Length: 107
Image 1 (cartoon, rainbow, N blue to C red):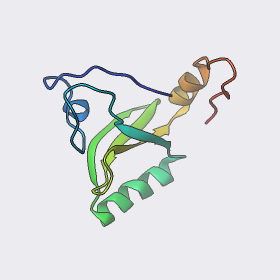
Image 2: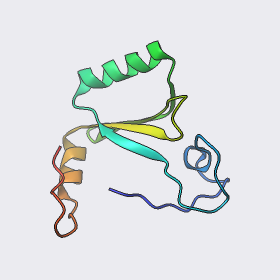
Image 3: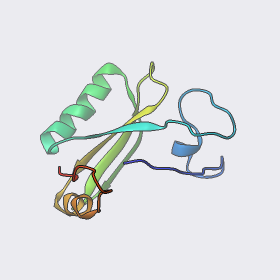
Image 4: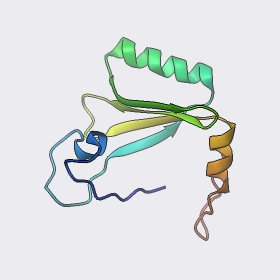
């Protein structure tokens, strides 16, 4: 999945300011996304971030849908996004049509 966004500095600071320097205009890689499978794995991820001193720059939860967070790793020029799908989120993502020839999204 690719997200293309036009963001101004007055908008969401998560997208308006990312690690690294870049020109005022251009396509900039913002983050990689990873699925975390289950509540136990989510808690382990949060624990590891705290232990290693990684900054969680954004965290959100929509009950019944998903948990999501963006983590800043000091030596990477982009964020890492992690999400843990609950039944509603899993059903939503699996219902999104894929481009012809692309593998179906299954979590």
